[in-house]
Image 1 (cartoon, chains in turn green, cyan):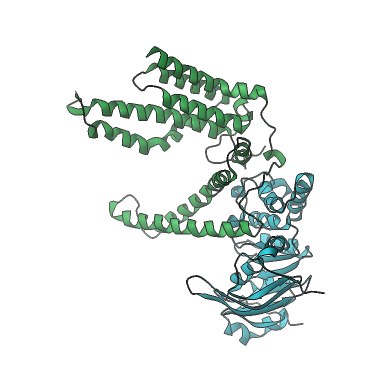
Image 2 (cartoon, chains in turn blue, red):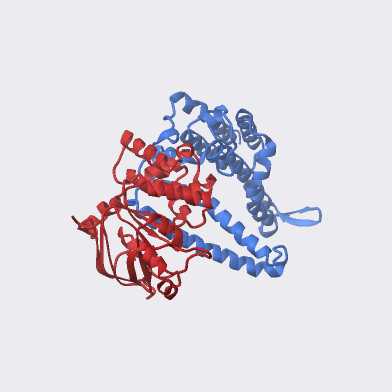
Length: 259
Length: 245
């Protein structure tokens, strides 16, 4: 196995988690995230439970915390939003370090941050252990409509191409004396984003033409080919993969019962 | 015997009013390799997109081996005419090269071992067997170009149309691609600005400008006609001379 089939979030490995078929991991992820979201945010211990489950999976997959942590930054924009809530919300207020904060806002912020963090961490786990080429087959086995599968596949493929394009545009700006850190350059960046949008749109059109000319009629055929066509998940694999998800559901249910 | 390609009176006006083709007539015999030369904006790419019905003519006709291009023959004609686009990133959209190569034939109903065999043969023809399971993002520009060619070869087209095949390739990749192309027996239309490349691969050249064919003949004679080239913003690279005949 070479490393050449990866996406930026993939971490090459041969652990049990890596070897599980992708469809099983996707189902486990969805169940886990639902369990986290359904947990009442007024309780703290269930979230510690979820974190423990994730730590266990990371250990099995041999993903170090130092690899996960920087990639968690993807969550930053939502955290910024959450930080504003205690100031913006109404209702009862408490004094913390001289600031008057809304109690409801604090709870809402806590809920967003903790549930978001767990969700992102779980998604990163699946991304780190699943290659992009496994996805189309896995999604179609799960009964996801072809249109959505092909949209996802296209997105994964072209995010790199667009990233490289954005990188080249940035390089060209910087080499003409632009310093992206100063505020008055925001206009140039905004125009750059607009340009990138136009380019992506045009590329989308060309990709579509190229697909048409190879006989595309709206359905991506099942391409169960070569190593991309991994074997269907066995019953044992389903049980193994759903174990962390089942644990998460147990935590969520007991949280509601004990409330 | 019917010609491989017969285009007559082909006009195309884009929705924004730009007239890309203004009456193109062109006949290509089976097995011929023809270079389509011309400056930017001459209508070369528009012509190419008409050959398998990706663009629809405003007026005029396209016939492939005697079959007129129409709504009910579209599928059959797309299988017979393979287009290789200029930017391989436009062509390669699946997670791995092998999956992308399988996309075309699978669309045309090829399945199972036959599909696998097609993919293997196409990858072999472009010497990319070792890269079958890699993402196109991790190939070099030359490998990506050859992979794009393989995605079309796997459909087993009678006619191959290539848009600027040598663009952005380093000299070795450029020669390797020429070797691959010279080894295929499909009828070929090579759209290019790269005149030496055209001379290397084709015996016949067609010069397009402003949406029409302005010259058609033996490539040596066309490239030796400095006035003709200059009139249509074409020129041989510095230091180059084609000995005609």
